[in-house]
Image 1 (cartoon, rainbow, N blue to C red):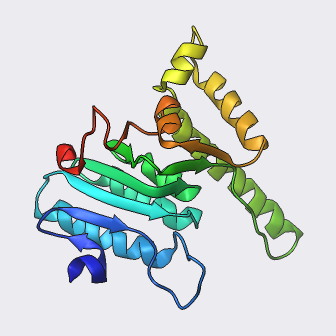
Image 2: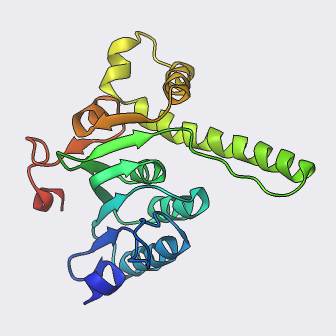
Length: 209
């Protein structure tokens, strides 16, 4: 079926964003295959009509470039997009979640964000250029999280005069401590998700359509 083979349910306008089955025990995470398949699927649904789209996502994270391909495709979509993250939304997939018009976590899903990891090859000048480019990407990542957190109840309660700078300082402190894990309700509290599924404001998947 299209759902099992391509990760798309055309009739119900639902997409499934997760890794392909590789010849390895390890989850390949967000990579070019996931990005290419997703890009085609969401463009197809958005071309058919502009009725709402639901994305079911579970991912351990992965490549920044491929993840931002997915992020940009969601942002560019003219249809209203809801992402339901199940299992986990961590690393790159926690960023992808922020692209949706409505961000939902299942009750036992967790959220994790961090600075990520680096890897460089080549000579000294190549290293310098790569480091400078990565610094710019880190700034983009922080901007995405800051945009989300500005509406978070935690920050509104903590700061009488909330500013992007205050949120940025908070996030940098958290990330310097290492991976920042949140359960579904905590992610909503910090502004990194909108709803937890199976709660009063989001009773079931059909209520999101």
